[in-house]
Amino acid sequence: MAINESNLNSKIWLSPPHMSGHEQEFIAEAFKFNWIAPLGPNVNGFEKDIEKYLNHNSFATVLSSGTAALHLALVLLGINKGDEVICQTKTFVASVNPVTYLGANPIFVDSELDTWNMCPVLLEKTINERIKKGKKPKAIIVINLYGMPYHVNHIHAISKKYNIPVVEDSAEAFGSHVNDQKCGTFGDYSILSFNGNKIITTSGGGALICRNQTLKDRTVFLATQAKEVGQEYEHKTIGYNYRMSNVIAGIGRGQMKVLDEYVEKRRANYNYYYQHLNTIESISFLKEPKTYYSNRWLTCIVLGSKETRDDLLTLLNKNNIEARPSWKPMHLQPLYKDAPAYLNGVSNNLYEKGLCLPSGSNLQEKDLERIVKLIQAYFE
Ligand SMILES: *Cc1c(COP(=O)(O)O)cnc(C)c1O
Image (tube, rainbow, N blue to C red; front, side):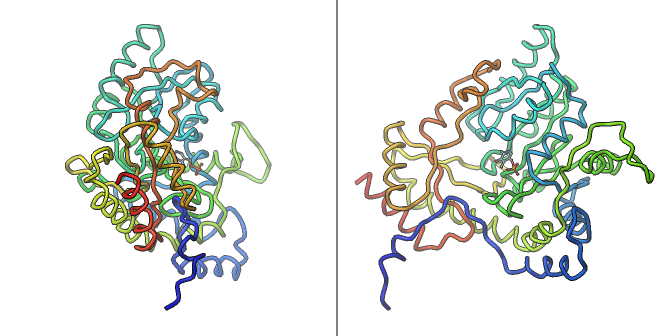
């Protein structure tokens, strides 16, 4: 068989969309019955599919993005101008911007080494210091970064002790679980994202998961311009245009059929990298704590130094392989440089030395081989 060179060197993406083939039937239905609107059978069906999958006191509302879901979670919690909201500094900026939309102030907390998510010890210290300064934080936004669940037991014990609700940003962790309880069910509110780079995608979209029907009804109300009941266009509250399109929701229904399969594939990617690179002394991996199960949305390795990380990043990119540095923490962002931050060095270290490797569910064995060989050759 002739191997052509362009194939050998074709672009390998970090986390591309992966259509299953089931999506088109649902989209065709939407067209057939003219449900080309932000409501319809696919919207309802996608929500039911998500609730069934999460299988734990979950009431899902599908929305235009994960960011919109976070925004509505904070609105439902009554976050207002001048309030303080505790945020994990190690994340993507979308986890924090909704705090700013509301005129509230993010207070950043660093990560711990077991999960790379919010450090419970530092969280409690931060709460106490903010209370001493005169303001009790109104909410805690915690992340399941790269698919790895946060320290659920510790974080929720603190949330309970101080009576501060938790918003669980599970944008990267659909399909992950702890002790068989799925990520997306731990927070007082939880959010999912279906952006083009996530484990399943609707091109763009998200979901807010509430814990009862009344809150779900309120979410739908707020997401559809907060129009009061009746024929008149009467409004008493600020609303948003955040509902998901019924066409897009059709993609989601098709993707739900393969979610578990995609989790398996991403975990297999991680295992492949681990098997082939773990013996290299200056490469380390994030292991799963006992009873934790990560969807391994992205495999992120940590190198011995920033120089090595930068070298590898350049090397992979030069070879038409998309790799990325690990998320730049929020306290280092020009946007949030003046916000209070409670730090321990973990997120800075991960940012300087972390490298995200291609992790798509449609990655081929030959792609994995190509990536691993380049990295191995670098260290030889
Ligand atoms: C992708 C992502 C979001 C935002 O989701 P969108 O659907 O893109 O708005 C929020 N938080 C984290 C951690 C993410 O990775």
